[in-house]
Image 1 (spheres, rainbow, N blue to C red):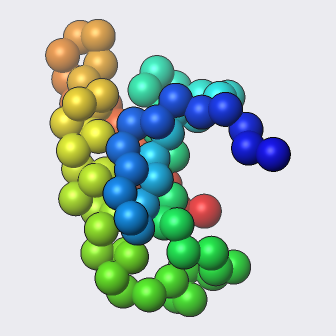
Image 2 (image 1 turned 90 degrees about the vertical axis):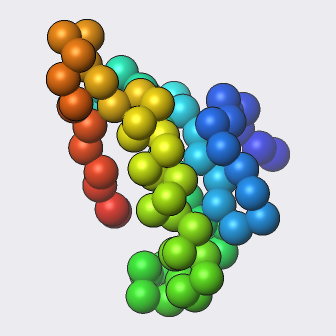
Image 3 (image 1 turned 90 degrees about the horizontal axis):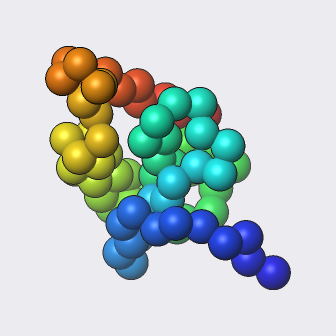
Length: 76
């Protein structure tokens, strides 16, 4: 059974969605659709898709209320 999510972006290799327990305003998760335990196990073609999507999302939600750029990119 799937957990409902608010999709931000999806293509054949990557899915991104709003976090249901956000740590900050605009908290988005960007994940490869390839299932792997470790990052080094994910094929390069899947990883190549991720950073351009992260950049687009950062531009869309990365400004603070004061207008400054304020975003974090984490890999766990």
